[in-house]
Every structure is written in C-alpha cells, then in structure tokens.
Length: 468
Image (cartoon, rainbow, N blue to C red):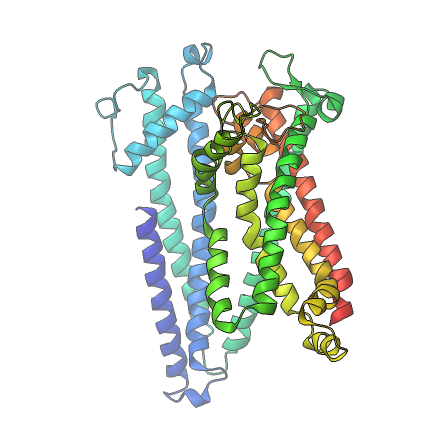
C-alpha cells in the first residue's frame, strides 16, 4: 500500500475512534452529557490520540529503518567483479537506488530484466530485483503493522471510557508528553548534528595535520594525498564578504528602522514595513542571480579596463564587493525589522521626558532612544552577521572560488560555505581528507556562528532590563 493511502487509512481510523469514543461516553451517561466527568469531546480526543500517535510513530520508524535494511541486503549481492574495478560500492548502490526507486514508483514487481531502463549496468539487475522485492514486501508489512497498531491501541483506549473516566486529565497529560517529546526531539536533533560533524572531524584530523588546518596559509585540495587544507584563507574571505555586507546593511537597515518607528505615519508604516520585509522572503538563489547578472556586470563597467572610470582593477564579474553588496541588500530587512521592534520597545515616557526638557525630536532620537535601544540593536547586528557568515548561494554565484588573502574587494575570493559545497559534491571518497575536511569546516563555521548568536543573546538579555 502506498504511504499516502496508508496515511489516509490512519486518518480514517482516527476519525472513527473519535466518534466511537464520543458515542461510548454518551451511552455510558445514558444520553446526558452532564453526567460525564469531562466534556464530551475529550472522550473522542482520547481515542483519536491513542490511534494516530502510535500508528504514525510506527510508520515513521519503519520508513526510517526500511531503506537501511533494503540497501544493506541489495549491497550484499553486488558483483565482486564490479567492486574490484574503478566503481565503488557507493556508486553502484546509487545506481541501484535510482533505478529501483523508479520501478517501485511504477508499481513494478516480478522479473525486471525487460523493464530496467536502458543504460543500466546488466550485472546490477539481481541487486535491483532484490531492492524492489524487499521494498514492496516492506511496504506490505508496514501497512499491516500500522493498521494493526491503530486498531489495537484504539480498542485499548475505548475500554476504560465511561461516565467516570477522567478524559480531560488523560488528554492533557498526553498532549503535555507530546510537547515534551517534540521539544526533546529538537534538542536531540541539534546534538545529533553536532556529534555527526564532530566524529567526521575527528576522522579528518586523523588523516590530516590540525596545525596545517588551523595555522596554514594555503587552500589547495588535489586528492593526491598532499593537499594543503588551511581554513585561514577561507575564513578571511568569509569575514571580508560579511564585513562588506554589514557595511551595506547596518546603516540602511538602522536608518529605515528609525524612520519607520519615529517619523513615519501609521499609513506609511503599514505600507512600507511589509514592503521592506519582502526582501527577507526572496530566495537566496535569486539574490545570487542578481549578483551574477546585474551587480557584477555593473561593477565591471566601472572598474574594468575600458570601463567608465578608465581603470583596470576588476578582471571579472565575480568579486568580494559583488557578493558583499548583494548580501547586504539581503540583510537589510533583518536589521531593520529587529531594530524597529527594539526601538518601539523603548518606553514612551523616556521620549516624553526628553521632549519635556526642551530637546527636539531628532535630539531625543539621537541622545535617548538610540542609546536606550543600543544593546538590542547590537544584538540584531550580530544576528545579521551570523546570517551573513552562513550564506552560500550568493557567495557561490557572486564572489568566485579563489581562496587567498587579499585586501582588494574587486578580486574574487571564496568562503567556508562554498568550499563545503564544493568538497561534498561529486563522487568524493568519504575516507579521504579532501572530503572529510568539509565536516571540519562545517564544525568551525558552527562554532563561529554559535558564538555570535550567544554573544547577541547575552548583550540583549544583560542590558534589556534597564529599560523595562
């Protein structure tokens, strides 16, 4: 049974449990809901939760475990002759997954020799057949298990329902447990991400010198075993581009926030603020295209040979300045929205007191409002900085791919995020330092952005109470 159909069956059983629970409670109260301990909907909700939560949990676990088991079984029958050639097990299994998934989606069963797409390696057909057969079998048993769990748990939930059953207390405890589980899942996911990067980083430092990574000055991966993999050139490019982005975003965003909060009328604010925040909803790939097709050529016409200024400072459309300017435009709504909220949180009594002492409106903003909101504004700037450091698509399309130290903003450079993408794309071997270095870079970037976020929260929380 397809997963969507199974999900719809579970929803139908959930709805049935809800109505049966209601009717059972009402029947036990002889048709008068006033004789019930809890309100009538709680009894149906108790039955519905007992049906849908365990069944969806079983479905989720099954969908997570089944691909691992199926892939392991298919990999076990791969021809040894292919494994000793240039193709690795990972590459062969990628083809098995691709072809097998297509056949499973088409509902194909039985012998597959005549149904396998042209161009598929003939020696992989047994592994593909096993993959498809096990996937169909797994889906069948998953459907049986999920429906059985739904029926059993629904029946167990209906048994205690009567007029004295404390349905409201049970439902509230169950919902509390679900909320705690959701919060724990988010925390565990974060811990899992960090640990996965940490273990791979340890493997990387087992193959490559940590002193070269942290203190070297060259980034030159070559997959020959003698690569120079230093983070410093990438870190320089990351911080340089982020600095230019903040130089663009902070004044513009802060001035926009001051205007919207202190000068703009209600109608202007209601129109301008949502229009400004639209910038935050534009996909970063669109910003990357804007950098590549508009900002880069525009800067080239100014600073390249034969340009408007008659100088030869820029060799191509990709540069630090191109990526920094476009990234700064992207960060404007982050700075303006957070700063606007922080400025509006300054008590009106402080403005009134300043105006009552004879200060003008602009003097009140400069000498009272901005100093009072400064900790929050600094926090907003640091959050924007962490957003800039983690940006990828704008840098990939606007900054180039050269890892080097330079103060010239018109030259191409690269960042940590772009190198992570580069090292993990393609057919890289996950046992080589040239691929594992991506995890070391990712962990370093995580520590950097986490430090900025913690600093921003510390500043906001430490000084915010002075004005509450």
